[in-house]
Image (cartoon, rainbow, N blue to C red):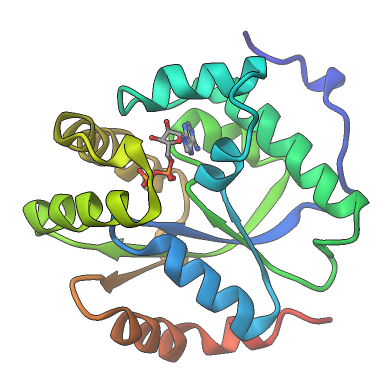
Length: 212
Ligand code: ADP
C-alpha cells in the first residue's frame, strides 16, 4: 500500500528537527529520551508509547496487539500514518512546538522503508545509538521490567528474542540510510546515569542550541 505523494497532507511547513535514539529492546532508550526531554525542553516521542496508548478495541490497537504480541513490527505504512496523526495532534493541542523544540524520536524509524517515508517529515540532526552486546543481560532486565511495569509483551522470552533479532536485522541496517557523521554510539552497558553523562558530554551543544 504505497502512498501517492500528492495525497500526503502536510503537517508542518518545515521538517521537524529531530534526534533519533536507537538501541536494542531494554537498552534504556526510553529512559534516556525522557531525561533528555526534561533537561532541554525537547519533545520525547516514543513509538512504543503511542502504540500502547491506542485503545485495544480500535482497529489500529487490534493491529498493534497482533504484531507486538509476537515480537514483530507493525507494517511500515500504518506505523507512519499513526505517528503522523499523533504528531499532528501534539502540535494542534500546543504540546509540541516544532520551531522551538527538537523531536527526540525513540523507536521510529525501525526499518529502511519507515526512514524513507519519514524523510519528508523530519530533518535528522543527530543519531544516538545505544550499544549493548550482552543480550542475555538485556533479556533478564526486560523480564524484570515487564513485571514491574506490567508490560506483558515483555515477559515472554521467545518474543523478547524475536525482538532482539528484528532490531539487529531491520533497525541496524537502516542506519546506513543516514550519513555516518550524524551517528554517535554510546555504551549502554553502564548505569543509567553514566549513559546519560556520556550522552550529555557529547550532545550538550546540540541539546542546548535548539532555540532559534
Ligand atoms: P522495544 O522495547 O522493543 O524497543 P517498543 O516499546 O519501542 O519496543 O515497541 C513495542 C512494540 O511496538 C514493538 O515490538 C512493535 O510491535 C511496535 N512498534 C513500536 N515502534 C514501531 C515501529 N517504528 N514500527 C513498527 N512497529 C513498532
